[in-house]
Image 1 (tube, helix red, strand yellow):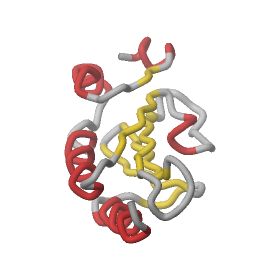
Image 2 (cartoon, one colour):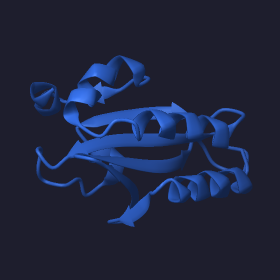
Image 3 (cartoon, rainbow, N blue to C red):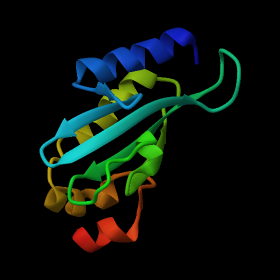
Amino acid sequence: MSAADRTAVVKLLKARGAKTRRGHLRIPVGELFWYVDVLADGVGPTAPLRLEVGCWTGALPPEPDGGAVDCPLLMDVPLGSDPVGTATALLDRITALGDLAGLGRSLGDLPGALVDQRLRDLL
């Protein structure tokens, strides 16, 4: 991947409503907050990119300080050879989820999602 790919993904995230909060991009959707960090899997300009995605709700205080990695739901999504297309598809999926009931019904559709016990108890 290139720096241009990373820039294009960040622009897409911001165009889709991501705002910086505590140094991380966050997308509020109803009662859920989606944290999305663009990370490189390695060093150098050709390292593959991935999205580290977390979901938090105000029903589970405190608010995460460390971004996605501190959220009660966490998943890594490799962006592959079409970073913007993959990010767009993921954003379509997560921004359609704005409440705990919808999140609970959709857990099977979220690739590799890790959910902590506190969130599972709410779902």
